[in-house]
Length: 369
Image (cartoon, rainbow, N blue to C red; front, side):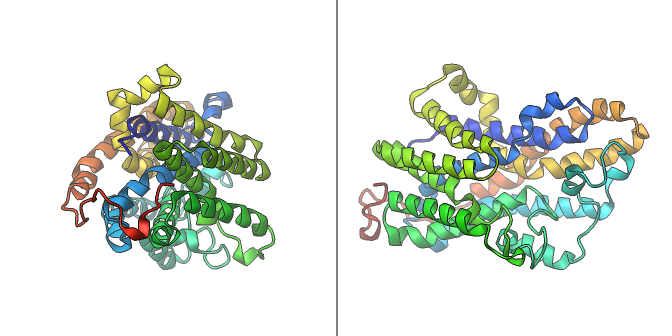
């Protein structure tokens, strides 16, 4: 596929949306001010669909060879991840700013997201994060492992599970459509059976089957953009919408519809103001730095709170005025630094992929249909 420029801009918009959703709950701004930013999980679902759409290009660049493909993904993602993970662990070790923020209730979601201290089984949590298996662990084995050290990393664990499944299966199923059907079937089956699992074997949202529908939606989107086959995409939208409706959160039905809208913006230039926004240079740059921005916005915001909260002596309004601008500017600046100092050099390192031939190798002859 050609470069999906507008979807590059979408990455930046989603990363900023998540950053705002992480920041606003720690202020005393009225509820209506942050009401539009409480759907961070839906933004991550769109990220998953985007991965299902574009990661196939990366697999093709490696001629569908699992080892080189996964090595390329590791080179692309892990250097930034390890830097941010080290920062997050160091900040938890230094202490929590919440003791100087009395307007945050001790049992609130905000208090859970900014860990008060190291988890009791720190070594196991750390090993789970280092190996990106935190999303594979049932709650009974290592409770809340997927968010204990670096909250946003839960989705990276899910992505890594998807990369492994894609690398192993694509040469076997030999069709994007069949692979998309498989992902959607896994999502439906998991939704049906999850409620019957014993408490020990309940998995977190970072478990791939929970997000498989969104990856399947992205894969079917690739079929549409490449071949013009609309039926697989329409079926995927309906399946994911039905899964959202059955989740107990009816607003989740909007996620596949929003995804369908941005696909039309990408392909046809629908909603011209939105298309121009996604194409403009600042949003494109945010898209380029979206991965480090997504990962580090929460720990950097925590670091800013550790500096500001003791200075305001419990004055929540003063904290809002001082911290909120810093909580938005500092992650963006840190993401730019991390992008140019760490992410970009590894992305530009010599690739060991084979050149893409004009003819598709026999095991993958039907890919894209």
